[in-house]
Length: 122
Image 1: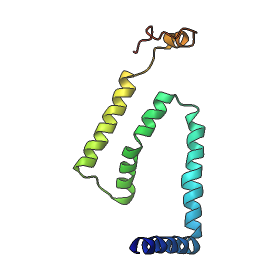
Image 2: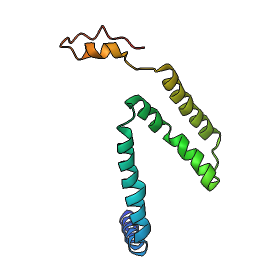
Image 3: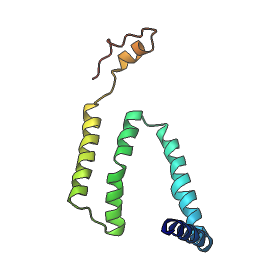
Image 4: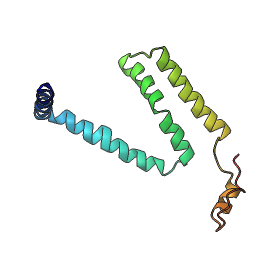
């Protein structure tokens, strides 16, 4: 069948690439994946959860900026609109502190009370 033939071709091409280009694959798996995740987890321990979420939310925007600088790629109109929406959401969250619980209420959250009506958001 055509599907089985496509799967076989994909498998054969994958094996061929692995056998002919092992160093780039080691680099991609070792440096850009494992090292990046290691550095991310080390750096994240010194950053608040709110700040980390903003940084991670901006990842597509960073990617677009670096692809433009390094590769000369450009965004279309929808890409620019999407990047602006992400940036506005991140700035709004950072400036207004949307969704952060006031510190004095954190103590109340750790009490045995199951009633959370006393919590308020700043």
